[in-house]
Length: 374
Image (cartoon, rainbow, N blue to C red; front, side, top):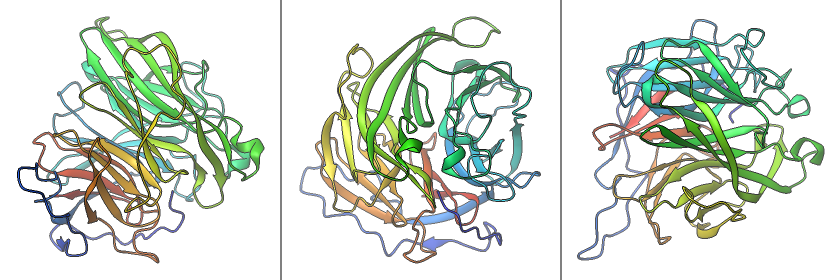
């Protein structure tokens, strides 16, 4: 999302930022305190820049179980830009431990993929770690960092050692932008937003063709990559457009609520919507029900579900994280990034709640690092 890059990184020991700029709203008597209520400090953890110089960290996923080279509690981060800061050309995943150790997990060669991925590799915010240590990451590739050369891409499936074992392309996958997943037994459901349906042809004008897919996988085959069983479009009609600074703007973060409702960050619409019965529906809900719009939202991007069920989003237009209840009340916000003008604009994307459920990891594109709100 961010084109300007600040290469001087600050170490964990040097910076602990008090969050005086962000305040939670007053909690009514008997109401549950917002999840971010006690979280007032941002600390940098580690740089996400690997040896090849990839920039612009996007996806963020916490490893739930150790497998192969993946370690429980660590955070996987995907990079969208190459060392020349060209969007849609990043090829690396970095694994970061909570103590600040960062190691490259994978560097993907677009010329040596085991299946189709139209356009090549440009890793997006769509990132999940599945049972057995299988990693699924989205690719929305470009040839030169511009939206004119953006192609449909695919979902790349890597094993727990960082080797690409298969790709999922077609059947509605067209610019996979963000993703969440849930697993039950031998089945995993991926929920994927897509932002390239008519977008490039629109030439910067709004087109209402963004989609949400549910992709059902068989993840129960020991030692074998997940197998795609079905693809169902459960959402459509989201506004999307190309953008010279952001490459593309469209439906971004997704998170599954406890009741099976899928929440979608409708970035261009500056709102959060809800698709009911996301796990079981076999019909298209359109853009779903509007949960909240405007207020503290300012182009919501990444989305995660807090332990109590509230919806956490980060803004494209400023450096704020916003907490919203499923009923639509914006109950808290926190300033995560204060750099730039306006402060934090374009710096935030992927976010994830830590394993202890008392902190939030997020990537900061202004500094190319993983940070934590705690």
